[in-house]
Length: 465
Ligand SMILES: NC(=O)C1=CN([C@@H]2O[C@H](COP(=O)(O)OP(=O)(O)OC[C@H]3O[C@@H](n4cnc5c(N)ncnc54)[C@H](OP(=O)(O)O)[C@@H]3O)[C@@H](O)[C@H]2O)C=CC1
Ligand SMILES: O=C(CO)[C@H](O)[C@H](O)COP(=O)(O)O
Image (cartoon, rainbow, N blue to C red; front, side, top):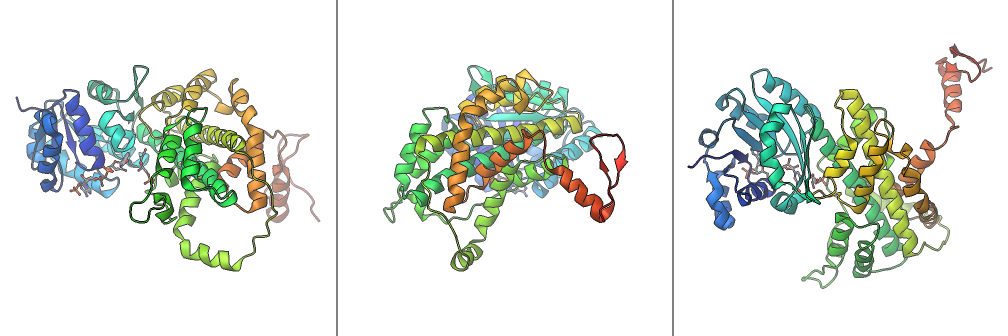
């Protein structure tokens, strides 16, 4: 009677929300936490749902509560905590049992662990979960990597708790090993870029036009009724409207401009570079968070360095909205191209249309745009998204607004690194004749590296004098 079909280990923000979600769907769930004193208050908060929760004070008792094959889902920080916890559980598990790492782990760690666990007959599954606390509680988007047998076991547990888009559960088995965690990492890279571009538009309105936070929030709220409709625009509108009870000022004005980051944005970039890809909108977003942390240096530079700006009228809100749409679209195309490159490199056969489909609800980057991307990536799965027949029609109408916004921000001295990175990337990928001929000439001139001529095959060298 007291058995559980799944066990959640780690009752922090995400783990406790996932456990309540499972319990609410009638799935008996074992729960445990490293520091056991958190378990009783969690059960109190669970109220009637506690009837479907099976607490355990230590890993052995926790495992003993699970039906076979046992499913141990870890919702704890990536890195050493996951490593150490798996080592703790491994001797308690038997052939066929599963460990599901549902935190934001590095895909290479997940692949390594999958292989090590498979060698002793255990299934290690990497599960990317997105949606924050609210998503985990009422329906996250979930990206699973691992073997087919593990998916067969997990599917009846994950589909009932997933977010749904028009009835379709936002969970998919995306590939073997670290495929799920890789997709989650890139999800977060896109999340960083989207947040940064929103912040850049906020900066133009605040510093260029002198709008206050509630005014900007009201504009974002209106935008959320149009093509920019998304969780992040909606959230932005909400946070900009909140005032600080202590000062009476908008709460956002009382927050230090130094952003945190746990690593997934940076990992996206590192992976992109390793795959020979570039993702300047995501790079700009990671860089902007890093620079934000160096507040004393920025203050010193502001006092010392000239701005040399030219007074220029900033675009009207409708132009800014289209610029944000274009930037967002290009950042998504960058992220999805990283996924496509990784899929080829690792042999994952990722279905990019399905990835977009499970990002339509539950996750942080859910948006109306994602629905268009489902169709776009179905059109030409073997080629970059921007070569899909529908891409030009999505990008074209918004592009002049992106150009106008980036140009006037540059003249005014207001930083828009992600928007301008997206635009430069676009202008680079659509240019048939680039400037790398000069790079090749330079390389050959100083290092005899050789180049290919346009009129004959093979390696040539120049007589550079
Ligand atoms: N918060 C979010 O919006 C999202 C978070 N994630 C990921 O989910 C995972 C959990 O995040 P979140 O719930 O926010 O984190 P919290 O900080 O709220 O909770 C962390 C949990 O991990 C446990 N823990 C910490 N260190 C160890 C350790 N060394 N060994 C065993 N258990 C440990 C904690 O136990 P104890 O109480 O004993 O300290 C606690 O249960 C992370 O990988 C995070 O990146 C994914 C999507 C969204
Ligand atoms: O995974 C997430 C959402 O999908 C988390 O919100 C993510 O951990 C946030 O990352 P960071 O702290 O680096 O901003």
